[in-house]
Image 1: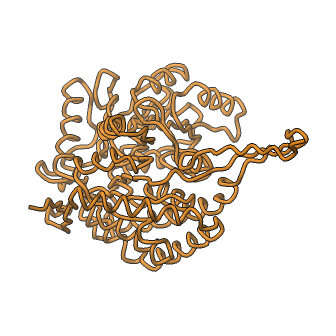
Image 2 (image 1 turned 30 degrees about the horizontal axis):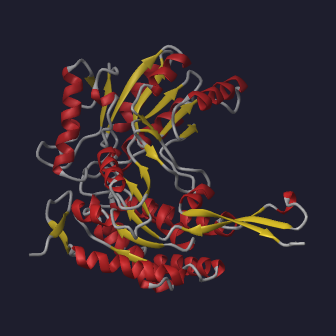
Length: 474
């Protein structure tokens, strides 16, 4: 009997769509087809692969009007915000195509060649790459690996989250309509057991995973037991901190951090989950933060006026509420009354945005990823105390510093000290919760290993091949 997965609409708890899992024999055939297709695809000139990438963007644009509602029904983000993911997807695609030729070019050593010798380093595709995509930003995250992998000459097996199966199918359809061979991009809906089967197949050369720490450990474990030495990139969770210095522009900073904490109901690996505020501005900061949070409109994500939707599942909602309850029981104070968001009922996926004060690092809410619309705000007395607390985390994805660096040279110098001392993959000044495709996206500690975006993303999806030529033999 075939195994199936059914996607449940977060806000209504009704079934949205069902997919049937392939058998292991069918999966092995898919991988064989990918191997054969990749050999031919890697011989297609890079210029032609880039041109197909441009056509892919046009094919994807043709679908864009239908995608926001599909996203809302699959994962719960307000339909009014879906267009932002589509724009970001296309912006990243455009940048990755713009840098493809330079990122994949041969590395010449002619300036240091000795007479009679020629040397250079080629970038060659890895082969078959499994991309395991998350549900929270299914387009925006998958583009980071899928498009550069294909442009670099690889074949891709794309496994979407069971929560967002249609997104991978849309992605693959736009690629094949643009001219990418069907066996170069194949969508696989799979259980964890079937996913492990793919990871351990000797013909799969690399795995790019985005998701939870627990999921990342499972992928790494499966790869460690593969027949070959399968490469793995892990983009995992975060507990991303912000520090508000005394000279920060309060109105601007509050608006940015409220959005950074609650956009997509806080369901982002780089969402702001903890804020440290200098004691000299702590009270007005908290007051403004709470006031703005209370203006959010929680409700049905398919309605245009909603700007805060449900979380992805009942289990997620229960976990988030439990973390808040534990913090309050340990002495934290919640500043958003439950009555202010009456839709947020126990037993539903609607979770009210919550602001917690009187928090400390003995509480899970300040140490472990929440992945929901909750933020803790803690008072600090100095840059040094803020730095110590920001680094006191098992995660290291992003961190942001908020200060008036434009008018105060000392503030910029202070920011640059944070850049040197923070154990994170990205450090922001006066912004947060953002990926710039020109910059390497990576984390340290439990936030993972590997890199995507920028030229280094292409490096990860290719291997070096050295060419050493002795031209003169006499």
